[in-house]
Image (cartoon, rainbow, N blue to C red; front, side):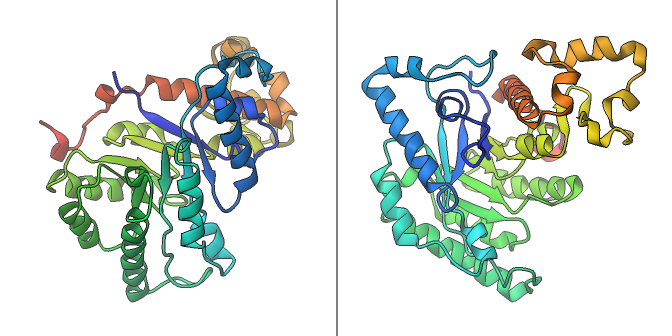
Length: 327
């Protein structure tokens, strides 16, 4: 039975997570540009574990519910977008060299994308197409120089011409690729993009290609389409903004936002709070009182909840609700 793969973004950049959590509890997506030193430590731990599995016993668990075991998967993002916002670019050859040096520890890695226009200025159609074609050129340049070329994911971005996606699916034998540019888009925008993109995939000569969705943690949307894997930093960001993800949706627990309608005491009748608390938090050993003024605990809770939700998403349970996906 094939499980859905979710990669936790934001772990390496967070001071709230130890090496034990990053390596031995979650799949992780980390940025080559932003988190290089921390990734190198993670890779060193992976190599120590391979030499001596007893190494895991020297690591401290961050929370009681964590069960440290076999390492998760490591996905590296190039950090091209972050560099672009600063008016710079990732050195493709340096990135390739580092990936080859650490190929034994890295499961997947994103290519160096070309981003259209300048940061803060809306690109025109010609700039978008030129950047999309530059992304394709970078993909082939990297693929021909990598020790593990199958780990490289070509990325087709929201807003790019769909004929380029059709071309890549027709002219390559890729086993895995990614859809990007979805962060910050509305649910409707993401839905419409995925519907059209998957329609193209299913009608192509490569209909069974695996698809990764960058920056997507909307589980209803992920169940709606045959997305093979995704990543997100939402679990960290929500906690920083005072919220947690639950089976009831997002709930504000930060005492600083007690006047908001979504604050847990305003959302649930007082007589039901104890039952809601048990249903939402009991499994992880937290209470609403624990989370009110403690961002670290909110982060731990969200990580646990996300992990449990992900484990429910078995491949055969993907709901093919659109007509174009019905058998």
